Image (cartoon, rainbow, N blue to C red; front, side, top):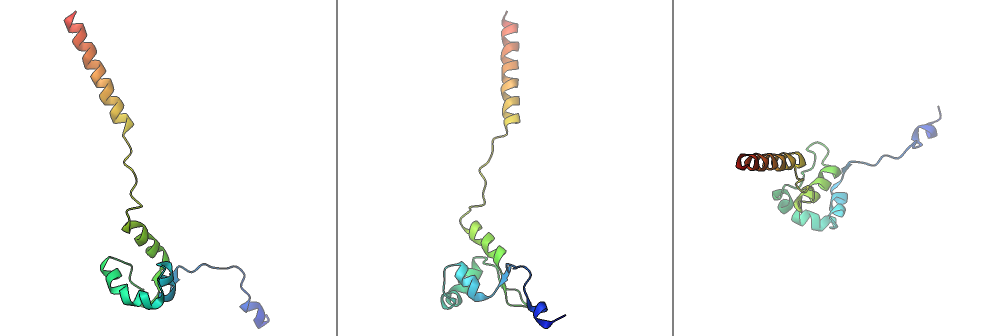
Length: 102
């Protein structure tokens, strides 16, 4: 096969591991600004780079960004079954009390 065919990209791949420059950009910082504040970010549980590649996990950064503002907290849904059972129990007790009075 010709060498040019091996070089041709068949489909694009969005990288998950990114260099510090792109991690900085994800936070809307320059690389220099990121380097200046990264120890503070690490103290706030910002994901550290991979020890082998030195790359940052983009998905982990996104999760960290969401959690820092508690955006992943879902509102507590009412347990309708429990509420129904409580109402039913109350109605049953009220009905029993009326029968005793009669």
